Structures are given as C-alpha cells and as structure tokens.
Amino acid sequence: MIEEIRVKEKLVALVIRKNYEKPGISFLTPDDFSQQLAYIHHPQGKIIEAHVHNCVPREVHYTQEVLVIKKGLLRVDLYSDEREYIKSLVLGAGDVILLASGGHGFEMLEEVEMIEIKQGPYAGGMDKVRFEGIKSEEVTV
Image (cartoon, rainbow, N blue to C red; front, side):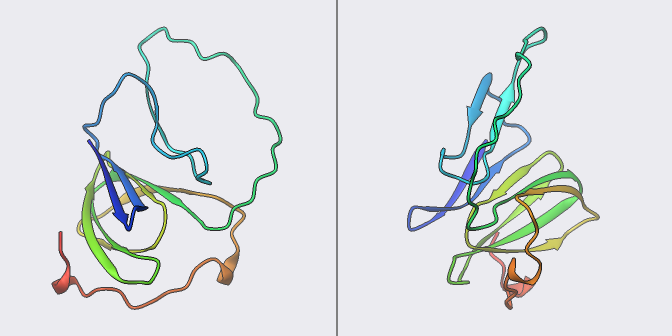
C-alpha cells in the first residue's frame, strides 16, 4: 500500500507500507525530485546489466529524507511548509517514508531502529530550523 500526504497538491510525505508488492520497477517520485525513490521487485534470475553513473551536476535546494524502519514503532508528525500541523502516522518495521516537503517531528512509541537516507553534504546549522511541534495529547492518527 502507498500513502501520499499532500497539502494543496504539494507532496509532503510518501509512505510505502511493508505489505506493498508490485512486480518490476516502480518509481514513486517525479523526475524533478532531488531524492528519487523506487520500489523494485524482480524474480530470481533477473539480471541488471553492470553500469556506472555519469557525473551529472545537480542542485539541491531542500533536503528530502527517506526513513526505513527496521524495528519498533515510530510516530511521525507532519507539518506544512508554514509549520501548521497536518496529521500523524504510525510506522512499523518494514515501512518506508519519504519526507518530501514541509516539516516533521518524531516520537518513538517503542524502541526503534531505522535507517535515514538524505542528500549531502550536511550543511550544519543552515540545514534546518527547529520549531515547537504538536503535543502528544493533541495528535491525530
């Protein structure tokens, strides 16, 4: 299952639930996204020819993150670019989320192990602005 969370047609988050299945290669992000995300399901024996990637200059204006949940339960609070609360999602082991725009915060509902993938290089203090998020008792899941 794929879930898209949008504000005024702008993609804020894309969730690939652990039970999603589709044969072949499915790119889930538009070509103009700085973070490309695909779901790939190939049968045994499928061969992908050896290749290298060309040096292609790219500009990244906003960081987009992908989280792969390995273990536990995580609540993700989603916000618009204007820092307005949208909704919260609970992710579990095997779920994947692309945080494409807007803001986000997290609460570990259980001990969590996850992998974070995002563009670099890291810009230090210029990379993000922290703000006060929603209180746990006000969350809508």
